[in-house]
Length: 173
Image 1 (cartoon, rainbow, N blue to C red):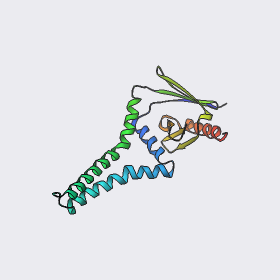
Image 2 (tube, helix red, strand yellow):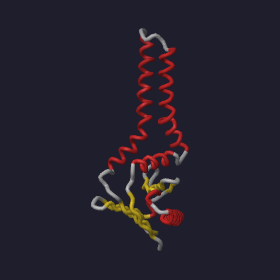
Image 3 (cartoon, rainbow, N blue to C red):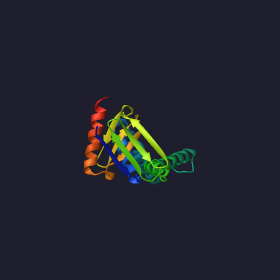
């Protein structure tokens, strides 16, 4: 039975990269991400600029309504544009008191220990999917819940060993 252990501390960059990788996992999430966090802010800014340049006179009721709607769109654009970065920062702040965690992976389970805080043991039948890029590996326990493995915290041998253990145990399902 193969097993491996490594220690890591998740940074804001790790959470940010995990969020990006999660958003790119299927077409629905990717389209929602583009619409909410990229296209809506740009359209709201462009709309307000065009309204300011060519808009109706604001001394009439329809003019005030259009200007109010465009201003609300601008605020929605600003808020949604900053939301993705704030999600990663907020998740990092929630775990800021946690020092280094130890991750033990074998053919039976994945054990994550934060000394003095918590211990989480997940058996392989709990995991439904895996996603990875060159910086992060995500093990999904449900459609929107995942465990983060930062590749930067592992050596090349550990990374290859983790990938083979994951492939072997997720393929058994």
